[in-house]
Image (cartoon, rainbow, N blue to C red; front, top):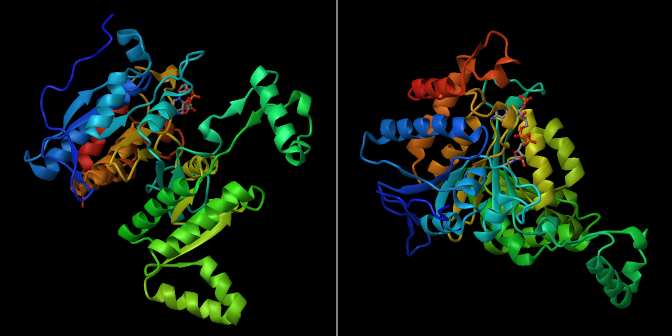
Length: 435
Ligand code: NAP
């Protein structure tokens, strides 16, 4: 069994310019992981859509050179490894790539291939835009009001994986250490003899780089607010600190472009509520972005009841996990929700489907390819090829508006024509230049 796979045969790699921005050649090599299960069908449809959009946008002056890199079942079968080092190196050296869903190896050494990739490349932001396409079946009355972008912290929080299994020697040692050094906190453990433990690291650096990315995004995209979602009322030194560091960063680095609820509180304490309201209104009138916060449980209600009040959301790992899937459900579910994992300092990014491998539908040419296609839309925008992204969006909008859709939408849309995964790709290409 070969433990490597072929390298790229044409094209040029991306690099990072001296000003810290991505240098994208006209013939970029983009590594991709096709994905397991439904990934195979989805990738075929997606690549055709991407190539057609690039061709329509640039008429042959630019072209992507796709390079297949292996992970998941295909990598295991061909190279004997679920995540070959060569794949991680490919994303590291070529900076930007895209992937389909991967089988999670059961009982293997790697908990999740996705988490491993994010950690090894320090992709600290999980970016999840959530918007509605006209006609997509939704369980809410006004899904069109949902237009949010979630910046979920990707490297810290309970996801760091620092856990001690109940009954293990490590858990006993950890409990003994806590008992000896932090007796007051150990006394709070309700059932110490049968407890497992998890540690939740949240740092100032980790918070600042995420909140910085969220505010920059809001400024670049002309968004009006950034909401810090946290559970700081209960977890003061982790989630509460996230809120405080987030506000401090906004005032320190974006003092001229933002107005924070922290400022509002200080003005209220000094001069009263009326003065604070007037100050905020003047700042927003002058075009500043409002940086506010919401407790996670209330935020989960308000994204449903008052979606217009949320534009960009910055939040910790676990909150972000719940929030992004709950929001995706409002606008059509995981078949259509795209995602990206980005390090804004190094330019490294992997865009990916947010659903799994749905093995029962594998190779039936049946499922919805939109999650990977819209992840590609995000990728091209990240590369600065916005003309390609615009065409992909128009194509998806047009295909859905024409009610030519895959089974998952067709079963909920009146008067829809059910088409195959590959045909949905064709429909997107057909509508790319709709007015
Ligand atoms: P799943 O693969 O996401 O599928 C669950 C259900 O979601 C499907 O049965 C289908 O619902 C719907 N669905 C998913 N993708 C769809 C698409 N493209 N178009 C239309 N409907 C779609 O979740 P799972 O069955 O729990 O997980 C299967 C495997 O995927 C596991 O090995 C898991 O670890 C892995 N996984 C990987 C990733 C990733 O790589 N990012 C993420 C999650 C899970 P209906 O049957 O109702 O039509």
